Image (cartoon, rainbow, N blue to C red):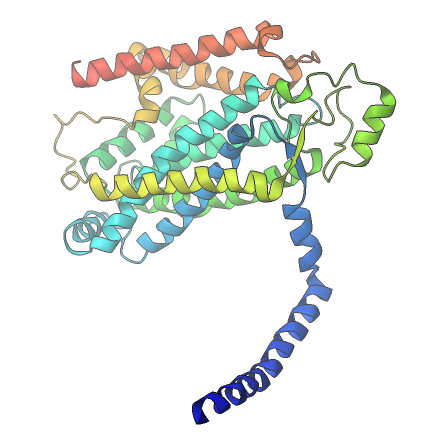
Amino acid sequence: MKEASTAPQRSRLAATLTRPVAGLLATTYRWVDERLGVSDLTHQLLYEAVPRRGAWAYSLGSATLIIIVLQIVTGMFLLWTYVPSTTEAWESLNYIEHHDEFAAIVRGMHLWGAYVLFVVIGLHMIRTFVSGSYKKPRELNWIVGVVLFLLVLGLGITGAMLPWDQAAYWTATVVTHVVDYIPFLGNWVQEILRGGPQMGPETLTRFFAIHIWLLPALLVPLIGLHLVLLRRHGEHGSWVNYEGVEVESEQHRAERMAHAESPYPALPSDPGYAVPVDLDQFFPSQVFKDAVLSFGLVILIFVMAVVVGAPLERAANPAALNYVPTPEWFFLPLDQILVQFPQAWMIPVGVFVIPGIGTTLLMLVPFLDRTPDREPWRRPEVMAPALFAVLFLIFEALLAVNRLFNL
């Protein structure tokens, strides 16, 4: 009986002790919220309208962002052990591989995260292209996305040089040799990247600085701009999201737009493509899909890091002239093009002119395709060249695989 009588007293005592703490936390939150607008910002971020149909495909953008964050976090952990020196870079990674299981998994996640990132960002761009999401008023966001893709490629190639094993050394040698063919500026650019006329300690230091400082300094603000533009213009879905929009009455359209959550109605767009037919809430519906896809990809990256890990070849040896460098798989098409243009005067054409024209056309797609149609089969003037370009890259990659691995 005595224990039963003391239980309510303990409950009252606990409530008396926690009430001031809860009140202090509530007061602190209100103080911060008044100055930062946390509640309004949270509502704006979570409670917006998004297209309902094809929502899993829209998750590719969120997955890209999550993997980039994962790359930043794993890269920061690697900096605790990695030494950007030609005499210690390989030694530090070799130590990780054999004596630090946690760091080895982190390094594996950093490598496989990069591989998965290339695939996901590529699929995201394909989804955006096929659905015509680059059309008015989203032209600038498409251009920013193309630049982000190029920066990710730059991070991939500079990251491949940091282990300073045989593959890294000869990759750096080939890359810095190729830039020498840039008209007028080639030798100057080569010496900047190498830190002098020859490969040396400064070469690794400069690629390390480019990888962890220069490229991320460009990448992060452009991601912010990409997200701001997305919020400003709304998520443009596939053409199936707009079936029937163009034939509905103006009154019905006005009523639907009046009750649409932000960011709809979008800023001025082509008639019939401002608000999708079927809207859904970003939270919890789209957030759930984004979380499932992103979590699945992170688990895949973790599993590959544990099972396969990150390979490390022998330490760099400049005297090993018989070593044949194998490029990363995402640069196989460019490597094959380089082989197909062996003459010195043709290398700039194969390495700079053709990729340069392709990149320029990719950035100009919103201005070349000015038709109001979103359906892929109604845009053969852009879909056919894009399909040809994709098939060409796949064909070149297959030729490179056959040449390098004798398949």
